[in-house]
Length: 493
Ligand SMILES: Cc1cc2nc3c(=O)[nH]c(=O)nc-3n(C[C@H](O)[C@H](O)[C@H](O)COP(=O)(O)OP(=O)(O)OC[C@H]3O[C@@H](n4cnc5c(N)ncnc54)[C@H](O)[C@@H]3O)c2cc1C
Image (cartoon, rainbow, N blue to C red):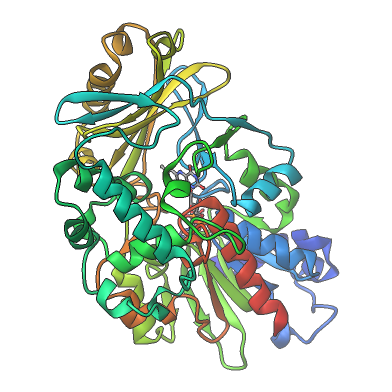
């Protein structure tokens, strides 16, 4: 069978699957399509490129409105950065997104719709701030230890929260101080608001934990938008909601893993999902159709939604090329560098020692930990972030595991090694369809110059992905919002 025959067969099979239409059957038999002249026939009304939370949310909304949709997903699974991995012993744990919290209404609604229940994150006992090799224990409900830098941190947090009120969320380039804030790094902002070592450390937590970059790598405007984004239409974002467990983004987790949500969503639209379909190019054809070339064949549609990070979307070849501002914008976004390490224990020994399992560490290599879950097991989860992760990217897996366990032993004592029964990890930096995580960020000078291109459609191409969200940008909730927004753009036309 030659390539053309294979493509015809594949297209027929996919078309036949799309709602079982006569159109698909005609494609398989090689006969003329029944409803429209061949030149006008599209494989779908809308092709969604990427089957992560944003792409699935877009596809769901479009299908509900009666549109024929194909989702072309490069991997052999749905979910993107929401992914369960197995430990060595076969326990399923969250390798990517894990938590949800108040004002994350969209992910909460989908979890309910697809029958995925949530459980509270363990937040009792004491948490540890590990500062210059000294463990400062504070009750888990207290956000910061009382140290010389606490007062100036509190003043800076008050300023951040004030800035978040009325902030043009999702369009930070419209803020009255945008030019200034986008001319400095988050480190510059910290330095101008905190003089003590502890104050600077506490403020730097804001980006190391949720973004996996260091403060000098990040525009202060990006960071302010991120704080403002940690809310919804009725509740302005805040530092505390972004970083807290109780009342914050880490408040709850999904029983069975966050990935149950995208996997169940994808299962309900199975006939629209095409896996292993890495998209190589998107061409705008004369007459308005778009042609999408993928590893599973070439498909046409009236519209395309590219549902992924802007840091990834410019790996696709666009014909004609995208406007220069859109290209510059994509080049200005960089994925964070991140891995998760999960250690399974015979019992939650940290609880016996009065600890919550939450540590703000020193990043050698684990910088933040939480008690996690996995099929009823006692689990400690640690993030390896930013330059600490970059340093470990080339290290063999066993060395990586040993270094992570060293961190746990320092934070939780020798039982972190002696009581270990199983472990797992997920490195995201070399994962070809994510290239890092949890999200992409910008350095100074990108948002004010090229920001308006973030969501601006180019011909028939629309943009989704959590990075394009207004509220909860960088989170599952933001991904869903972005997908629904991109679908709405198409539905109003
Ligand atoms: C370690 C980690 C921890 C996190 N923790 C949390 C958390 O606790 N809570 C939370 O809310 N969020 C968390 N996040 C962030 C959350 O996972 C993301 O915000 C969200 O999943 C992004 O969804 P998306 O659809 O925008 O992008 P993605 O999930 O990246 O989806 C993009 C999809 O496009 C596909 N793709 C890429 N290129 C192509 C191509 N050329 N052709 C076809 N398909 C392609 C990819 O395979 C992928 O499936 C975490 C992320 C990570 C990595």
